[in-house]
Amino acid sequence: MTGCPYKKVYFNWKTNKAEKCTFCFPRIEAGLPTVCSETCTGRMRYLGVLLYDADRVEEAASAENEQELYEKQLDLFLNPFDEAVIEQAQKDGLSMEWIEAAQNSPVYKLAIEYKLAFPLHPEYRTMPMVWYCPPLSPIMSYFEGKQAQAGNRNPDMIFPAIEEMRLPIQYLASLFTAGDTEPVKLALQKMAMMRSYMRSEITNKDFDHSRLTRLGLTERQTKDMYRLLAIAKHEDRFVIPTSHKEAYMDTYRAQGSQGYGGEYFGSNCDGCGVPVAVESGKSGQEIYNEQFYGGIFRD
Image (cartoon, rainbow, N blue to C red; front, side, top):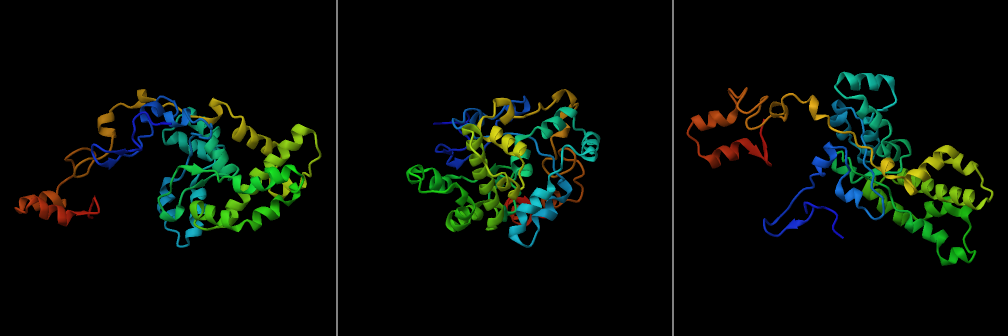
C-alpha cells in the first residue's frame, strides 16, 4: 500500500530521478505526524524530539574505530530532564513546549533510555536520526513456534539461545552498530525478557525477577517498555511540538545563506572565487571546474 501522499520516496519516471522524502514538513510544523507514520498499519513508527550538542557532532563522527560511532552518537544527546540542559535550551530560544516534548519523546525512550533502537549504518558517519528496533522473529520463533508449543523449548534458555544464534545477530550488528554485536544482543535480550515477563503477569505465573535485574531493568521499566512498544496510543507514539511561526519576524533573511554566501544573497561576497573568476573572463565551465568539487564550493 502507498504511504507517501507526495510520492517523494519513489522513482520518478518522468524526471528519471529518485526524489527525497520531505518529512511532510507542513504537517510537522503544525504538530502533526508524517502521513506514512500515521497510516502505518503496524503502528510501529514513532516521532519525537531529541536534544543534542551540535558543537560535538564533528568530533563524534570522526571517531577512528567504527564500532565506537554508535556510542559516540549516543553521547551527543542531552538529558531533557537535566536542569542545566533546560536552562541552556531556553537561552537558545527553545520554548517549554519543545522541552516538554523532548521529555516525553518516545524516540528518547527507545534509543537513549532503553537502548532498543539503533541508527542505520553508523559507519557511514552521517549521524542518522532515523532509528530502528531489531526484529525478534529469528529469536522468538525458536520459543514460540509449533515445537515450543509442544513443550520442546524451555523459556529459561532465551539468554544462551540469543548468544548462540550468531548469524542473525552478526547481520543485524552489521546494519546498526558497525559490527558490534553486544548492543544488539542486549536489546534483543531486553525485548525477549519483556515478552516473557508480561506473559507471566497476564497468566499469573511465577517469574524470576533476577533475570530482569541481570539486564538492568526494573518491573516499572519493563511495563513502560511494553506499553510503548505494544499498546501505545497515538499521543504516545507521536510527540511533536508546533513550530511557533509567530516568533519568526523575518523568515526571508532567517532561511539561511544562499548563492555566494553571507547572511543573504550577495552580501559579504567581496573577494570570493566566483566573482573574481567572472571578472577574469573565464568561461562558465572553467569556473565550475575550479570552484566546485563534488557539488560543493571549494574553500
